[in-house]
Length: 486
Image (tube, rainbow, N blue to C red; front, side, top):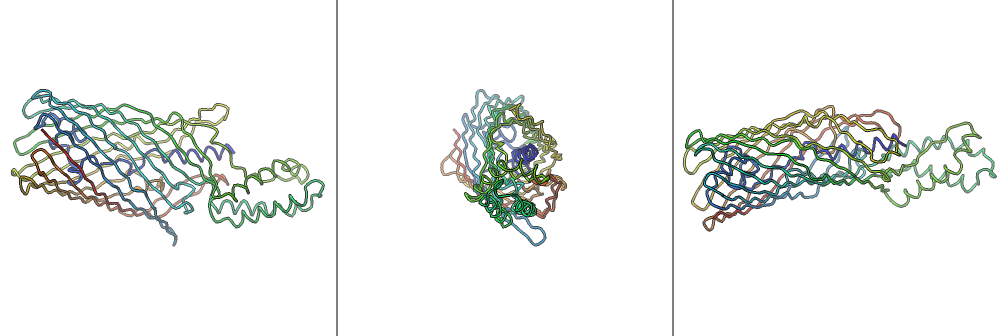
């Protein structure tokens, strides 16, 4: 029973640590249209995310910007003729920035963003239900920022990151095949049961056991699943940057966003059954085994199988979940007053996620801390974008990026199918009145198919097993935004 508790919670919690795909870059509609570049660009209030040093170059006294995106993503798993697809809900990351010029060389601002998040929904009864059925992750951040222009060409900036979030997910406790195997094990026990006198076990209870064994052997869906909910309370990090105008046409920027360790201090879990019939089956079987198990073990000299599902949701847990650091070098080039080209090289410190450590709050459970290996590797993202001012009122944008996956092939969990990705984007800005701008953008992401393996321990048999297969993913995201400067 304790082994089942440990494996279930370790597997579930591993999904709360944001796998490849959790880092959301939809934090500016303008920059989404340019492939998310921006570290070497002067973006007004939106510089607070991309490079806080750029905030000092505000062209007006006040700059406001807000927007929202819709993420529609699909993933497909296939192995040996079997396949399954996700039916993910639409994600809606948003952003809001407010920048203020205090002096000619000093600016401040504050932002509210959702820089991390993920939604994934596999079929309840798919082959990997024992690893993941669905997950919904949301993380928010507030960043107060100060930016100072040292010279007309050089500026620095610093922001304080305040991050918090929550997670909601579920996974099966055992597969339909596992329940069928338990039924087969009990079936081998039934002939011995028939030899027990009726005054020891009534004929009605014997018949009930036979019917329950038949139900287990005919199981077609995972009998029970766990749902986990946890809140990561506010944690603090920082975002710093520097920006330098090499000349009137070229600007270079460097930014660093620190790692943040999110902490779930007290998570809660619930136990759910596939249907009422299966819940009654487990309840009745547990009652019968509690009533007759010790007696049968003594009379028959065999160990009666135990199929009870522990009420582990009576306990609570705590865990630390890292958000990786980001170091980005960017450069922008303005060959004319109408064109701007930009390049960003982003280095993501995913090696912060080397393992998952889970501790149980209730000492009476007697469960030792868990360490689950993840061993993510650091990765790079390469971005190129361009904008063209067709008229004083209309700007067109386009971009492309290549995003490396940090997940190793031998530790590949379907909680968030990670793979190298290519992103293509386009957008425009329309300015009907001076200072008021409306932005739209569209992003398409194509994942390069990936074959991966994930070793895990079967919670029923206790044996080491391997879940493997091929994954594909695609996503597209429209974005809208509005900004006002005066």
